[in-house]
Length: 122
Image (tube, rainbow, N blue to C red; front, side):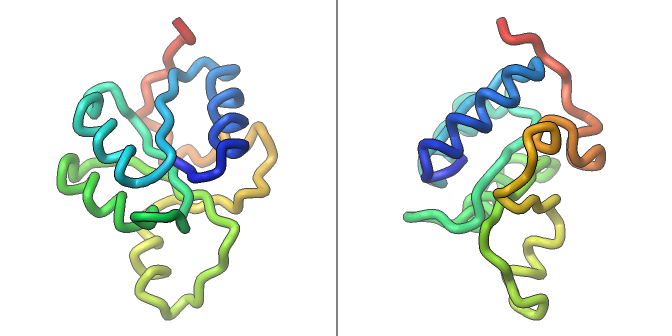
């Protein structure tokens, strides 16, 4: 989930090139609707932190109400002060800077992806 088309597009291509099926959303509202419909098919949620309409953290909080065992990774280009409430909320998720190299998106981190079912692109 990202509000930037280029980020959604490249992330989708990288993951699919590594054998994962993907669903994309432009914002938190779309992501919640998509998860409500297809949540049983979703193993991991990738989200931007700062987005219009609903932040990544607010979206993840709502998704956790649907699935308390939700696995998620947060991409961010923004820094947070360690004492901020957002930083404390963010601590429960794996966070990656938006400038990650391609292999990192597909392989990192094991803790967030250890229970993913590897899927082919069909």
